Structure formats: C-alpha cells, structure tokens
Image 1 (spheres, rainbow over the protein chains, first blue to last red):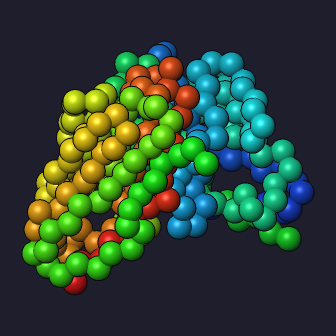
Image 2 (image 1 turned 90 degrees about the horizontal axis):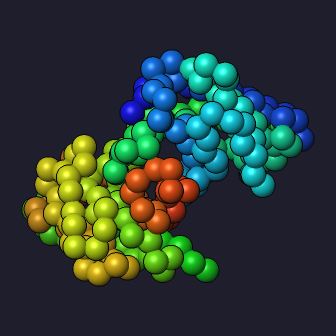
Length: 111
Length: 116
C-alpha cells in the first residue's frame, strides 16, 4: 500500500471550504485513495474514496491529480463539527485486510 | 441505529489480569477488525477476520487473542494484561475485506483500557 504524506495541522474559518492535501507519490495503478476522519475520542468515520476520477458525496469531494500522485479532500462549507483528524490512506485493490492509518491532519475549524 | 457496538466503554485492569473486549455488528458485514490507538499515534491493526471462521494477525498481535464467534461478533482477549496494553481499542467491520467493493469501514466508539 502507498505511503501517504499529510500536513500535521491546518486551520479553516467556519463556512469556508477546507482543502486538505495528501501526497501519495508511490501509489500504484490499482491502489485506491481513502479518506477517513476521527473526531476527538470517537471511532474513525469513512468519508470518501476514489481511484482515478474525482468523486463527490454528501460529505465531501475528492480531487485526484491526473498522475495520481496527490489528492485533495474538500469540505465545501466547513463547520465547527468538522474539527477532527483527517486520514488519507492508500489501499490496493488486492489488499485483503490492510487499512493503515498514519498520523493524519488535524483540521481546526475556527468561528 | 445500525452499527458496531463495543463493550465495555471503559475498563481498568491490574497487571496480569485477563479480560475480553466484545464487539458486535448488525450490518451483515463479512469482515471485522480490531485496532488499537495510542496517544498521538494512528491506529494499528491487531487482528482481523476476513470472513466468519477465519482470523489473521495484523501489525501488533502479541499479547492478544481473538475469536470470531459468529458473523456478528468478534472478541478480543487479553490473557495477561500489561501496562503497555493501555490504549483505546476500536473494533470495525466492512462488507468484505477486498477493495474496491469495500465501501468503507464502520468503527465502534472504542473501549478505553487502562492497565495499572
């Protein structure tokens, strides 16, 4: 599975878009990019995942660069409840168990 | 609400004591997992069960045993607790282990274990 690199922390103003970057330069062709978040003291929560194309769901959008070496998770209108640690994870299509969490990015949404 | 239920939520053990952490899911998921999370660190996989009747070691299995009792339940046992096992333990489940049909893991709310 690809090694991912994320900034340790970011700030965002409430109501503005939060753009969380992730580098995964070693990602292989069959590896998916997953995003999870963990609000303080809670279990991680699945947000979105993608392979090549940009993806959008009710929580967020995922933009993957054409060379797939990096991606950005976008929370379009951040709220205080979006303050959490966000994890970017690379996972191969053949992987049968591994979801490896790094240290993630602590996003703080400020009023 | 459908989801993953873990019991207990909090536990204090003395060194050498044993205990079992319980996990149950009601989403008819095939795969279940146990992770631990230490302060300032990401989650580390202890054991997983890709399907009912199978279990396999993850990154940090030493000191733990697991049982996949049925499709719904996956328990984690500490036979002789040590202070190094003080952690928050998360259970998770997914439709199946293999991506991309795995649309994501559902995690429980965690068990906070302190070993003194």
